[in-house]
Amino acid sequence: MPEKVSTVDVRQRIGDMLNRVSLRHDEFIIERKGKALAALVPVQRLEQMRRFARTQAIGFLEQQKGSGLTEAQAADLALEAQRSARRPVRKSKRKAK
View (tube, rainbow, N blue to C red):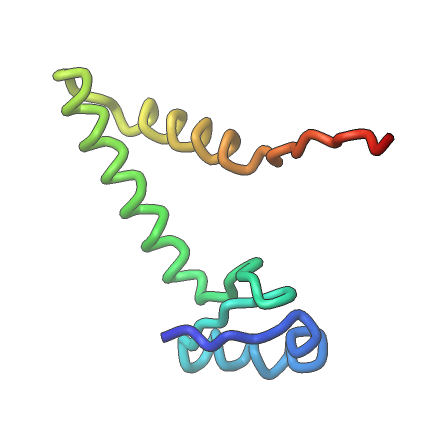
C-alpha cells in the first residue's frame, strides 16, 4: 500500500524517499490539500504498468476491429491516448456581475 505524503513532506524528504523507492521499492502518493496529485514509484513498476496498459489496449482494439494490430500501431495509439489524457481540462470562467 503506497504511503501518502504531502507536497511539503516531499520537499523536506525527497532524498530519503528516493532511496526508499530505489532500494526498498516503496511507493508514495503525493497529495496537495488532501487530493492525490502524483505518485513516486520505482521505474520498474512504471514500465510494468505501461506494458500492461499497452497489452490491454491491443486486446481491446483487436476485439473492436477484428483484425491484428502491429506493435508499432499499438504504440502510436497508446501515445495518442496518453497525450489526450494529459491535456488540461479547462473550466469555464463565469464573469461576476
